[in-house]
Image (cartoon, rainbow, N blue to C red; front, side, top):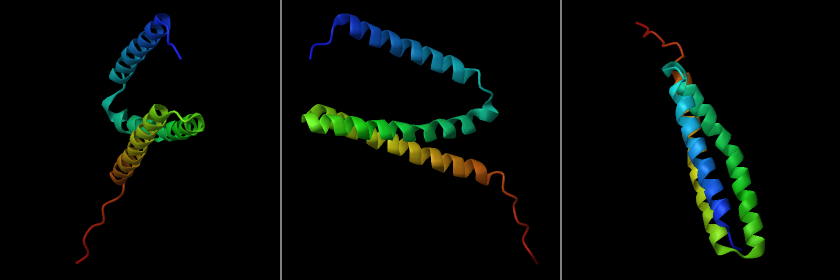
Length: 104
């Protein structure tokens, strides 16, 4: 399968625009909302895991070794992201719990 130069240029263009918009949007978020935004974004990575599993299944049926390896790496990193998101969310929610006063 040959990828044309136009396709590569389009992919690079989309990547640059996405990176620019991401930086601009995150820089406009108040610091109080960074943790909830991050934990929500990490939870959305669960959807990425489903897509990665589907991509691995498609590549496995065609016996594409590179696609299987790339999909496995993507599943690993998305899983780490989801687990990290849950830890951050748990830590954030623990900040709002009432602290018990020691009984004498």
